[in-house]
Length: 265
Image (cartoon, rainbow, N blue to C red; front, side, top):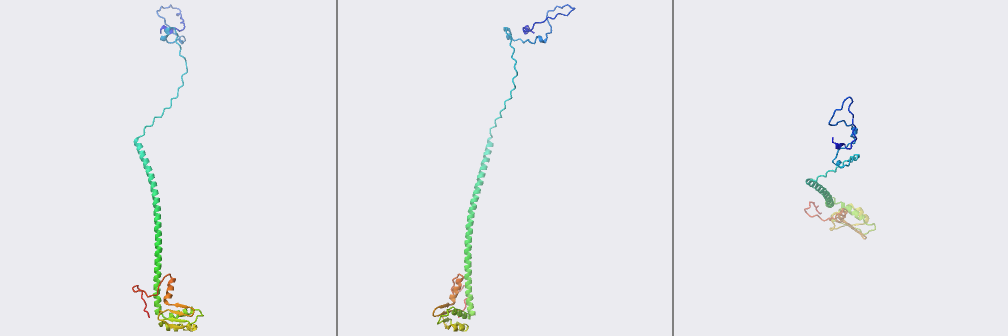
């Protein structure tokens, strides 16, 4: 240890040699230095040559450990262009699908309304056509029934001409009791039938029976001073057909219609 290291040390105490022995000469001095003697010693510094004692560094408490600053999260990586393109395609697909579905629903509703209107018009036309067909069929059936009835009446008059007596009786009875100068005109072929079948009625009313070629068989005409009764076949037939809503003449039917006209007497 150099002498400069101990400039500020405490004085050194000389320890006498042990008794009973002479001191041995020595060129050097050495002894054990207690710790308490060097506790104020300081290491030598180059600036100590200036004569100024080195200042002891101030003793201070250690600075408290600072908490490490929170690390910033790393910046996200830039988006992948392929992912952006795929997302844009998917969004476009979803938008197109939604718009397409909305357009399809609107088209279906409009088409359904149009079909409903067309079906309604078609059903209405069917109903109208069916109603007209039913009317035509009913009218044709009625006309056929009237024509068949005409043939039946003609055949009945041919097979049973005595019905003229009942016709003459009803015609005379329809006159008022106050009627005078009653005259009953019938076909010459029906004259004996009326005389036989309606003699009592004619006698009671004082009626005169007369033959008339202009009157068709099966009919008669009654005249009096106050009224007349037309009981001709054609007139009675037109009244009966009118009750069925038909207009039918008693004239003979043209040939070729499949109906057989009876022979005229």
